[in-house]
Image (cartoon, rainbow, N blue to C red; front, side, top):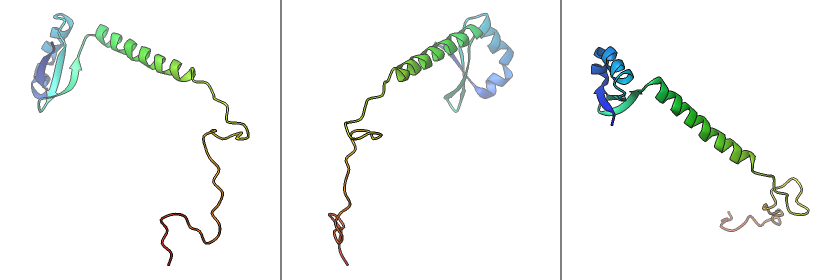
Amino acid sequence: MAYEIPVTQARAELADLINRVVYGGERVVVTRHGKPLVALVTAADLERLQEQDAGERDGVISTVSAVREVPSAPGERGRFGIAAHHPAPPAGDRGPGHRGA
């Protein structure tokens, strides 16, 4: 459980808060209007968080790089293969829902 403290009080007690984190092993959450704003954690905790973030990014990158290109349907070179070709409507036909003048 983290110790919470308002930012105004944290300013006045910064040295004490640092000691609580470093020597007491506490995590301190600084709040503004009762909502978490920042946290004071040990450098070791920060390093673990950074390694975790890097591992998650690596997982996403390896997943995306594992996606292979799927060939298009025959005759649809350069297209997605799911696109349909729609010829232009005959002159005077403006499609469904069009109200003529």
